[in-house]
Length: 508
Image (cartoon, rainbow, N blue to C red; front, side, top):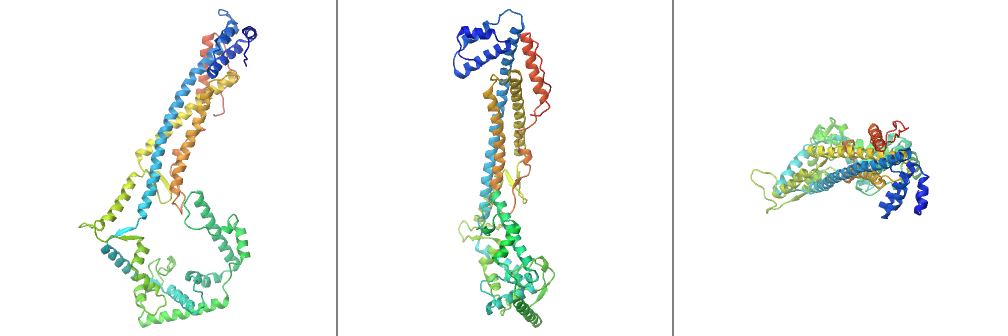
């Protein structure tokens, strides 16, 4: 609005201006002083001198009104500044919570690491564990038909009918399940298996889980289910089992079953009823209650083809690791010391103690469904209280910002600055506080997702921990504050300014 004018020209300009325009010009010079660091006292005196000090006219009242109103908005900006400082304090407090959560993520990974450290046995404990597992395995009853199928597989593999690298479960499925399906059904099943795998891999990648193995089916990435099925069909990787091979398989299975039943009659194999869902021959729920053969009699039967069954039972290290996980043996010394009346050696007690101590420092826990929750009620309450404080302060900042922005636009025609830097700072701070809080929540999910291969990790009460930057302001307070500022300026100036605008209905 203003230019560097000589005093005479500036005075002439000011005399032709309304009281409002003179006030706006003086305000601009005041703002320029703060921004440029230059003194504009002479220019301001020149403008003010054009308004008689004792004149009781509308021009002087209007000048004082706008000058007083602008000053009052400046005082209001001090309240805005106070609320911005309060929001910064709350932001730092939320930052403390973030640090606690970061530590909890690290402790979560440490806890998993210690749980993955092999269990530590003394030699005596190892022998006891092996003896117990051996007895349990030999007490099982295994489905007769499954034994028949696996013996048939090994026989045909030995005769060269099946390849050395063939998989027994795959062959059984090939001849006894897939044989009853059409080629189109087999292709559709394979396509769905590929699509499901790729979808699961994509979900794992999105939630940040570490890759569990090498990528497969990469040539199908990006294809729809129908496109995958068409590609599978074109590649010819799915075929029907030849009828002659099916007949041979069924014939051999029947012969093997007759042989097994004969051995039962001879008393060389013992019968029983299947009660376990899993065994060396991969039972499944569908075999419960069916006729079977006791594992002990099968172990003692030396003429069977499946020699690996006995190797599995007799392999102490392999059986214990297969059933109990990885382990170490503490041979004497302090690590292998076991106190009277206790079962764990010193080294194992140390491992378990570290796991228990890490639990005490975990401020976030994950349940079986992947939901994250804050472990301490006290910490959770304090965290939620800080979220609520931040939300209240954001509301106050937004309300003060709205008063200033609305007043600047409506009363000062957007031609002068009213705490512009503070307004920008307030708007930027709200965005940062909200973004930082969202980033904190996302960071925790990402860290817990790294080793979550089969489930989605998410906050149990995320809505309680989020901040809403678009929270509704108190429109009545905003309007009343503007009216009060106008009323004080009217009183100070003797002016009688009245707003034309009505209460805003749009929520800010």
